[in-house]
Length: 87
Image (cartoon, rainbow, N blue to C red; front, side, top):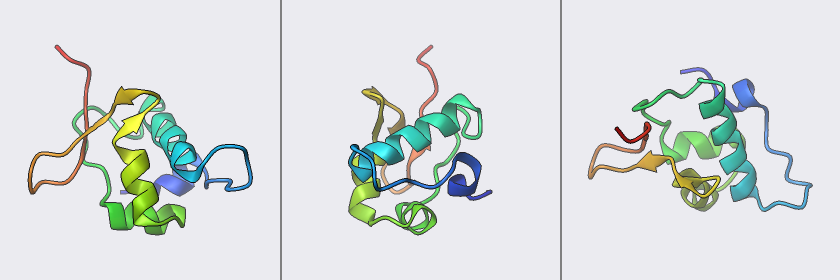
């Protein structure tokens, strides 16, 4: 998988938003631009943290919810996946 930070741009870290919210926006941008499709596996927290140069805690806060919507599910032992629209 291509680096998400390269695909959607790095986090600013100098704005008014906390980094986890910047990460949420970056993930939402990846979803909206179809870089991440429904049911795609997200990179691991460790990989996202390294890719965006943030802590794993920031990734944990930002990866579960994006824009007030649940965008990632975590079935036990399988990592997080992009959640598609409910059918």
